[in-house]
Length: 457
Image (tube, rainbow, N blue to C red; front, side):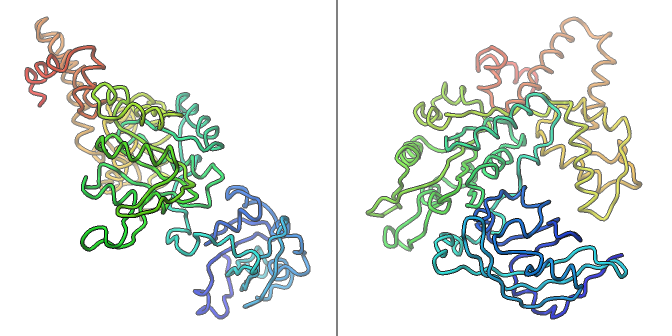
């Protein structure tokens, strides 16, 4: 059992940053309000951990570092002013309160609360900082390490993420609902040099058509009744990344303006009279096959080719079944840490049921299924009775179909098999008839006839 003697506890709310080290002064945890500090230290977030605090600054030693002094003396240092010079010569002024972490009588680490200030000549580093209300996490929650997989295709996707993160090219992500498109976009952002800048995300299908243009490009006061000077998402993403999900839901006219903004790297607010330059990266995503969107004229060719400089295709969960066990273990660990329950295992028939299920909602549906089990479970083992009914019903339907196959006529068997294939492809296509028809190699009219025949719509 360890303890922390926090003097002046009521004043800790004044600090923005938290740092925890072990007994050697090696960083084991941090929470920095301003990620620009890491940029000036020439270190990425994932590489900040595991290093001794004094290695980041020219003038910090075991004798003058507040962390190292408290480790040696065991006596808290409160409201200490420090001037720290990075390897690049950047000056960071801080006020910190540092406390020992003790286990019985032994000092096993320190926790330091700090607030950073900037020398006048370094104030340029605060550009966009104060106005970015989501600066603490740059508005992301995922990195590439959150893409859990043992699937060869997904391993290639992770490799591609690492490569494209080094460039500023536009990226088009294609994947069904629930396959992790935003996770991939955030992984690209957090693996890039833009990680300390905002990640702005918009689901284009969730915004009314009448508001989408002003949402993207902003408005100028007086341009229409009640309008104010409001920056759009393009401006809010300055220096960082703009992620446009369900890009296929944008109307053709707006696609023209979007293409112009991406090509020219400038936008003009609605009612505005001047162009605004942009330094952003655009990543778009669609849950429908881009080839089908092109065939049906639902996305402009020029926009498609501009967005798809790099295209990342995400497989469905059904196509990466070896990941079901890996993801199941991951979500059990996640919910063990986030719910007042502890699950040790799942019954074998649960895993078998999961592997046989079609997962139309993909990874998101799997995560929700595990959460459902946590709300139903009555022991420390998830049973078949704890998972959602639609999954167990799918299992029972499959068993009945297999059991009855011997007594059906040839026509009944052919019809049942045809219906099963159509249902499967409809699930893969999220119910989009045009794409399902393309997958099955038939016309939309023929598919609609079959769907009516089998009462699928």
